Image (cartoon, rainbow, N blue to C red):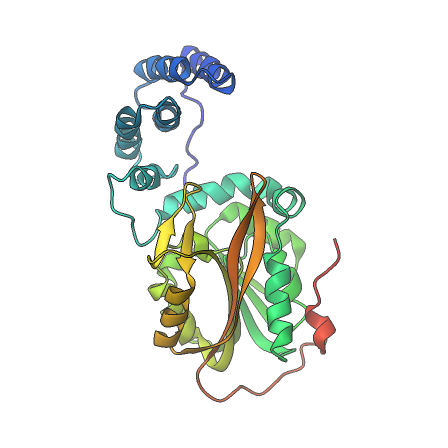
Length: 324
């Protein structure tokens, strides 16, 4: 997907935007918003400017004007690479969608790819690959013929799956993330693809992992069905979700990530042909110093277990998390 320019292309507008950011950083949200409005008047086709104006207006306590700015950003960029529709959902003027715009997810991770590993592991205390590895090891399964890492990112989950998989495949929407994953050399095959449109392949795999991925997908019926079709009977599906305790199946958070209820996940797994092996509450990572609670889930596709294979490394130590 074409990169969305963060510059307006107009030097005067860019300078005004910089001044607006300085005012915002100093806590003068109203002045920042007013200056940013002047900025988009100079560069009316600047998508990022309209989006940022919406955020500044929201911080200034002018939600109605913020909505108008986000609507304009969405009109200018129907692919919604900045996620304006999610802002509108959070503002209550659009119904919460079943899934976020693909353009937003792709853009987010293309921009994040260069610092992804250090940001997650070092600054946010990211633990999901470690927790999923522990869940798989606790099941007693120590080797897999064909594993698929959905939303593989830069390969943090793949580094652990490599130890137990004879063939390891990674799928991600972001070309930037895939370039980082390819450089690590842990995957046998990498493919760029949108998990929202995941097709049921003809290969029958025996392990599918989705580490910190489903938080960007909203409703999970489609992806659970596709994973069930990919897996051989007895195959494992290991994944994480952010969790919430309300009555809703899922909610969209201010972070523009989705949180899913334990009940929804359990009922959907049952309906999709899975038996739950384990579903544990866990601290997934931190966000601005706040621990993010979630579920680490291991489910098995109904049917007889497949024949074990030797992936070159067996025993519980094969999935023991690496020490950083």
